[in-house]
Length: 559
Image (cartoon, rainbow, N blue to C red):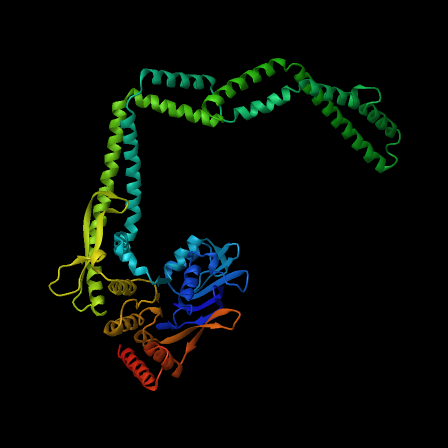
């Protein structure tokens, strides 16, 4: 459940804290008081869209923090798999700066928006003001049915992957069919290109080695002069380092054995002399090598010319050239036995299609059985929402060919009167009916799902009177198994609340802000009276409100 909500500097909300309860939480207030802003802050915290106009004017950032309590093992696994603290307490926060930069955190650790949505989607479900309009889209019907079955949700990725593999195989077959066999001229050109590349026997990374060697050899004269100068200073010239070092060693040898310090220095000079001789030897060898490098320079230059010529034709790197050669060889091989190649592509395409069809048929069977159960449960739920004779159907049609969602064309049908033929809800349902249908769907999903917190933003759109009372009773029953947070204008719904919050907008002449606070006892009656009558709340209205609250309390006590 959602234990608390903290919102800071979000639109016209300065800062509010709300401690929520289990059961049925209601938020009411005048139109424009900021109820939808509050829902917007929750959606933003859960990874939803955030625009700059949502940032308040009392700071350079907005913050929304949600504290949940959940023992859901699936959520704990997600937390563990992503190296997050595993606890029954889950704190989700989102901080958004003026620049639009967003930081999402779970239990204090920064996380990606996608991970935030994954975890939040298992904690809370938000039913927005206009969500029922999604029922006017057939794909949403399929998503609702699929979401009702764990088996379907596990199978869907397999079907999608099978469709992707089939689509690739079909594309290859189509391209090969359209291109046909190559002409003799095309084939001769490819064979020439392949022969040209293979004749060079290229090795990956060879060009880097050759270019480094070319840089050395092209500076051979400059290097030789430097080596000659160094050798002169070290050992070949009059007064060279080697001569000076030998003289030093001879001078010290006359006093060895007298002082241990002198002996140590003499030994170190001997080591230095040997090292100097070794360096001189290496320099002479390198100088000799450079003096004989003329032919190697020509060979390296010629090899680089060949490689660079191939690069200009087939790719910027040797790896690109070799890959090009592989592709050319494959095209030649395909062309040499084009009919067999085409036949193999067709076999692969058909095999992938059969696999897709097999999985799609399995998916169809699951959807049909799930659709029957879902339709029966939704029909029962709708009767509780004043659709006394409602018959809800999930019809599974069949497309000509399967796609990433299988063969099925899912559509919801509804009959609301005895003897009346069922019609697609795409064409027959009013706004108020759609709202109640979605509530019925949400209630059925909530009863069978693991999400424990549901938010309803103005579920009362287009309903009143007895229907409003039925909706209130349905939500009250639903709140016994799930935490419900409901924003409403209907007194019937508000009267059923276990916890009632009032949202008010204040204007001190300089700024406008929204405040939220809990109501108790007589304040609840006054708010119900306002919802019943509007601006003028008379004693008789308050008496009606008091009676309504008592009747609601009696109803809940009898659940």
